[in-house]
Length: 221
Length: 268
Image 1: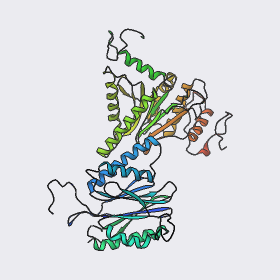
Image 2 (image 1 turned 180 degrees about the vertical axis):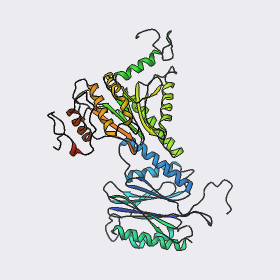
Image 3 (image 1 turned 135 degrees about the vertical axis):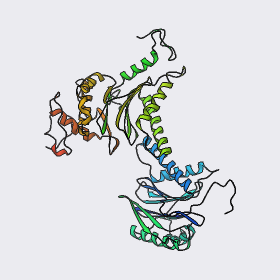
């Protein structure tokens, strides 16, 4: 690959998805780390639990992913010391945006999705670009397989146009198990066509009972 | 000792080789309300007396969590203590960030002592007016240190600082030889007994003291009021000078209710 002599980034691939439900959020990412046409490892977790109701999934450059996660964890500790409580998901969302924009002129090469429960216990998903522009949505996907998955999620989850129906919460009416099944299906599809997605799928479900983790095998080619 | 011509600057030695400003700073520690610490092989307990300036106000926070494996109790100028706790927390976070492992407590107290020493050798600064009991776990086991404003630090099996701490020290000196083998419940009990000594007749309730513990498999945390109240109940039953019996875990084993007013009702 012809790259500039000073090119400091690398795309390690991977895909993340998150879906917000009425009282749960599903966050999922594959576990493959690649570079070019090679695989670094099949067992790399792209998901980081920042607080007990807040989970971050990132894809992109692994060095920046790790640095960003560590940064957020350290700042979260400081927050806990000062405020005597854990950060809520909306607070972490704003904080992540600020952290990303802080490096506007030497960005974290990460495409992030933050998922968790908001202050009322409803599922929330925040989606980011590399420099911190963010939005609360009902579902999102980032990474190399994102363009393959997004139309499917739109088809399944998108609420009707606000012109037809009054705008309401973008949260899906699906049940938790239906959302998890949908995630497995979209990842299986993305794995077929995206070379950077595959090996294993890590699914995290955040609900009032806490955080649960599942692993599903994906195609290894 | 006081009011002489060598005590204006911290950077002025007295002819006898003393730095009076540093010694005055140690006096500030003695004015603060009591803080005690005691450790066993696996746990360390910190306990402080909550003194409020008036009945209308809340009491000062004297116990700070520094990291999962380290906590401090302070006596003296609580503002200085708060600032130093912030420094300690930052140091722990930075170390964890860089080395992905908890900062060993022996390193932390040296950094704290060095920070205190700086203030004893700059003409535009003053020493910190707070003594810190630093309790923590690392690979070498449980440790309890005392950091003073002079920049020295010492390791202790148990220690009491602050006002009327001599009574607690006497109590601890009588019993410290057994501490190494104590269970965490026995440590808490003896900690409360020591606090009781500093109260000099005032009633010991869970509102007047704060107790925190850190140990193997147990991150640093302040013990909640109800648990402390239950332990206090069991203390008052026994003879004051007799060794307190080992406390059973479940509340069902607690002895019958005492007649003291204002204490939590218990199961009989």
